Length: 124
Image (cartoon, rainbow, N blue to C red; front, side, top):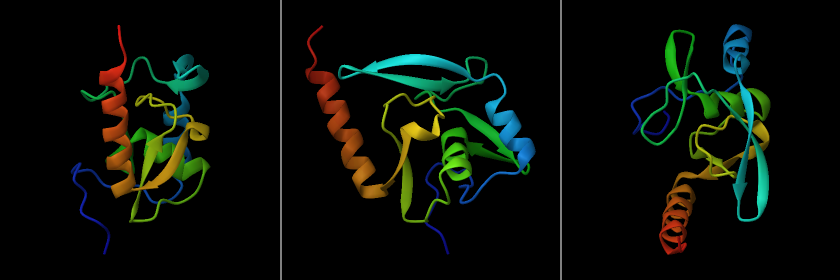
């Protein structure tokens, strides 16, 4: 039995079917994203709807999935129940598999909290 899905969305654990991969990559644009002195080439869908936090979704086998999770599972390998997918680039619409990494759910929550704290400390 898998972990409880607090997003109320099925979690892809392995590679998506070919039609979903084509839809995932169709319309992707490469957008430069600056973070801590590094430039990331993020893959984003400018036309795809996003959640309030910027995450994009895609239908796979008739079920709505998080696009970054589909990308990770397709290009990097399966996602264990005890892990989540973190954006190293901190750009939530990004689906570039090179920018995605597995992380424990607990560590991901800590990481997000650390990032939010850093973002508040940055002078404008």
